[in-house]
Amino acid sequence: MSDSASGGEPTTAAPRLVTTDPVSTAVVRGIVRTAELPDFFDSSFGTLSEVLATQGVAIVGPAFALYR
Image 1 (cartoon, rainbow, N blue to C red):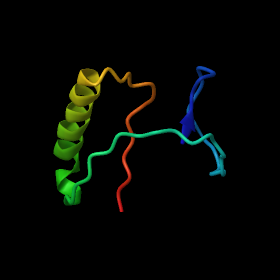
Image 2 (image 1 turned 30 degrees about the vertical axis):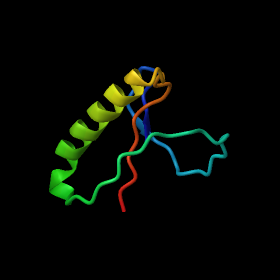
Image 3 (image 1 turned 90 degrees about the vertical axis):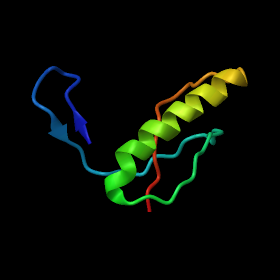
């Protein structure tokens, strides 16, 4: 995690636990190898964007991935 908002050199912050309110997420599940992740992300994020638009759902946050 880096922070260069001050305009200086990026700094590394220590990990910390953060509590947030629950939110709904749209999900595309897949079983992919590590080397295939960029293509999977490109495809799934594009698909999500199209499907949500047809449903009239606005994307209000950044894309994220859970890989395990």
